[in-house]
Each structure stands twice: as C-alpha cells, then as structure tokens.
Length: 145
Image 1: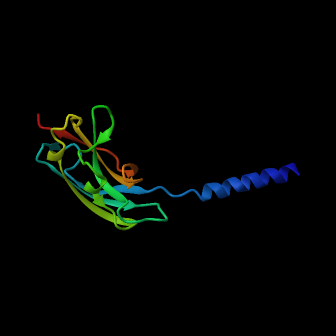
Image 2 (image 1 turned 90 degrees about the vertical axis):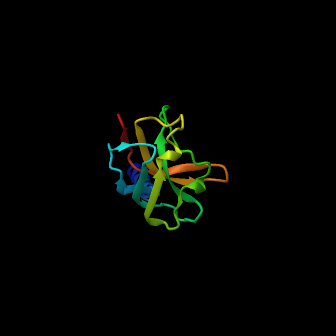
Image 3 (image 1 turned 180 degrees about the vertical axis):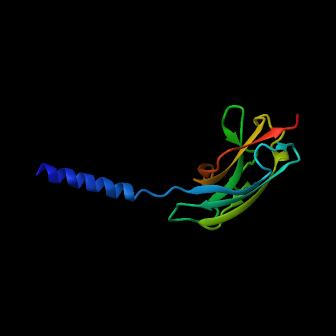
C-alpha cells in the first residue's frame, strides 16, 4: 500500500514538471559594432535578434525589444520614457532588427563607462509597468583613450 502511494506522488511530480511553460528567448544573431570595439557618442548600435515569446495568449502592443545599458549601480536602464519607444514584436517568434544611437544615452549620468549593453524583451504588465522576460548576454565596448 505504501509503495503504491509513493509511485503516484512521483508520477504526479513528473507531470507537473512536464507542464511548466517554456521560457521566452532572445539571441544575438548579428550585431555591430563587434564586442570590445571603440565607441563614442556618434556610434549607432545595430542588432539582428532571434526571439521567441512563450505566451499562449500572445498579442501585439505587449512585447518590445530595448537596448538596456549598465548603470554605475549595476542596474540596467535607457533614456526611453515608455515601452513603445522600443521595437514592437508583432509575431510570437522571428527575427527583429534594432538600431540604437548611443547619443541618446551618452551624457546620461547613469551610463557606466566602458559601455555595456544587452538587448531585452520587455512585456507590458499594465499601463504603468513592464517586466524583462528575455535578454541577451551583455556586450562591452571600449571608449577612445
């Protein structure tokens, strides 16, 4: 009797684990300038990113890709005031192209130098909040000596 109960519990745990949702992904396909290149305020970052959104109720005007920079406190930021300033994802999976001029953030006191950027998918949670659901590995650039 006891052995049967243990097997049922083990079986239930396996079913629960198998039904966990897959994570959303964001992967750098191509980017320019290359990592460790010298950048300045006139540099424009360009990236081609493969993405997949793990949401069975995917809808437009909900997911946006942003370039986020390291701040001196270790947090990430950009100077965008709203989520719509990013590139909207209109399909659940695909390739998105993003261009981001560094001059937008270059003189911001929160921009840590050398410059480190990562691309992130932000999901709108409500009218005032969003959350990061996927991000790339960070890319670090050097400054002119």
